[in-house]
Length: 457
Image (cartoon, rainbow, N blue to C red; front, side):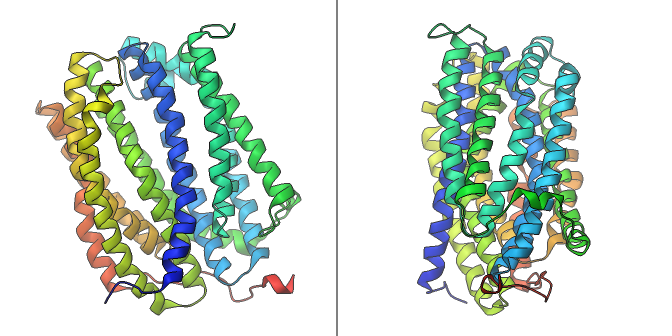
């Protein structure tokens, strides 16, 4: 099979991907600005915020399970132009995300030190992490609600509002970071606490922006928050049926992230600092791949929902070639920016040395990430085979990544070897993705027959 010659595919892919990439980039810059400013406070502050920040990372993993279900079902119904059902799906996702965010915020407000100690026992790191986590705890609730609304807009091919929301968040967060971390313009110098407060305020602002947009300006979905009180048992059954494998997969991935932090938390402060820097580099490249993979997922769901299976076969070849080339470009870029990026931080010589090693490992594994992620998530999952990715991740996380990493830790291997084991699945999954795509048994229409069209409303 050949690359698709359909101009509409490339046009739609770019129209969806560009705002999503920009949104992801801005979200990354918000975290990067936090990390960079806090980096001036030393290794303990960087490591403490990184470890406390794992709560946000884990929360994203779990919330993405809910959001992924919304996107999976809603994009397929969008292929049928059934906006009434999409509104019901939005209500289910918003309620579940709100509960998840509220529980996370409550736990972090009540037990900040215990939460940080899940990841590390280093006393100085725990102290800074506890301070930051308590300050930032309330942001988790607003983050979850915001993401639920943004993903609903994406499902109807409205990706630009997510970019606007993130842009507002960037301006607010970076401005308040500068004022509250360093005590500028008459504000108190609060250090890591100031960074947490700035994040909370920016999360509240971005929620208000998306709330007002959905309520007053959106013309595609026309969602009304009064629908939160309505129930649809049949659709909720579908949400659970197709969502549980996605959410379970996110739980598995959350366990993987916790294991990553726990394993690295047994090493020195310099290693944890290097892991923080490497994670920032990974996220910087990942924002592009994630945005494009998300666009692939929306187009896949829409096309499958419309019953155009032959188009999907054609698109799948294009996606594989496109993202493999993107992975090669990402590898070169990571190696090119490694030195200048590390020089931005005021960290110890030990942390600098480990950072060079860890980022070198990432330059290789990111090629695999660029290929397998859009294949398994953008095509297979969005195409309707919701159980395969969960099974695949479970096997790799518990059968390969964690056992190998623990073994190398116990054997006293160099930190870069342990880090490589933690990232090894990104390369190994490529073979699975290649053969799974070629079988084309993942194309499944998950919509119900009684769809209502826009014209009927």
